[in-house]
Length: 551
Image 1 (tube, rainbow, N blue to C red):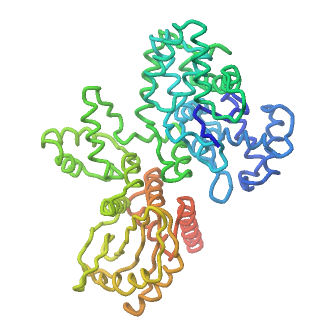
Image 2 (image 1 turned 90 degrees about the vertical axis):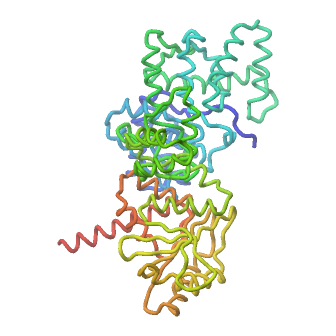
């Protein structure tokens, strides 16, 4: 199936003022999201009925609940909800706020202006056809910026949007799209027809015999209309129904300032590289759950862009910039900058709380090909979680083997981590299990006066052999009698997802470490959702235990 080369949006009801009604109806149709959604046609039909009852959908029912699925897809598109690993729908923070009627226009506007391609819904396995891999665009923001230009007289027609805007796949194409529209406006009618025909042939992904421009415009003009309508909802542009978007020139400065604020606060979200759940949860933060970009409100002038890029590059090896002190940032920057300039940049960065995962680190870590660098970056994630990390420490015994990562916490806790940068599957074999039990664990027991209390594997991709974690625990009892040392196997995505969850929920380092240690139970984790469910169940168990003690 050909990939999408043109914008798309689910559009059961185009006006965003019905988003809250759609959430309320979905809550009722699924008994408060307690009924499984995936594959449950009865729930889909119930949702259609609930929408009909609220008067936000035409009073007809599909045979298989497709109408309900389409409406749910719209809510997923704007990150009000997501589907968890078990097929249940989950409200995000912004979904809950809209559902509760809190700051509805502000929260809906935020979701419109942070909508991006790709997002969590567009990457779901059931979404077809997939977008071309080159997409990296915030459609509503792009369209508003385009309209707010003197070069276009603050005015863009539906036809221009259909042919030139919907075919843009990157935020950096604003100047190119503007130039193409200006050229098109100045063409003769015959030339315009040829341009439209060429665009239709090059960008339409649909399987059909007629690839004419008219068919293209009919098929995709409705998408253009939908984007025009949702942009109008933000109050930053005006939709002249069926014709164009425009900005009052008197409001141009205000529109620019508002979009600049969003560019600063909400950079392109790449958490889909970690997991679709973390992508949905982070993109689904409400308007008051402000998360700065990796470099906060620092917006360098164009003549300082190279310096800013250099700073980003240098700090790309660190996942949580808030985790670094002023002196640490300065010391890192001094590898490339003179002392005085490093001090200045460190001052700028530490003036504000950055309080978010470093996007540059995420991309680099999850695509790292150098084994040693992968190990170092894994160590940095553990540091950000809250462990004291030693890389490649020498074992107590005079042996040739050494572990990549040693984790310490407070006075007694110590664990060893084996980082496996296998780009396909890492299999924990019986021989590797034997090596961990007979050499690594005994050779490091007593290091710095600490007893080894856990072990683990961090894999770059998938893993297998989970049952051998238990085997290691049993084997090591021969070398270290009387101790129950358990392990964990976790992918780099899941480890990053856990750190991201901790940052988003403002967890202290003590809380982060406690949750991670709680998850070590001779289990492997291949998805963020699975890992978070495990620690959340543990928290509930702890709460229940404390409640019983109090009573």
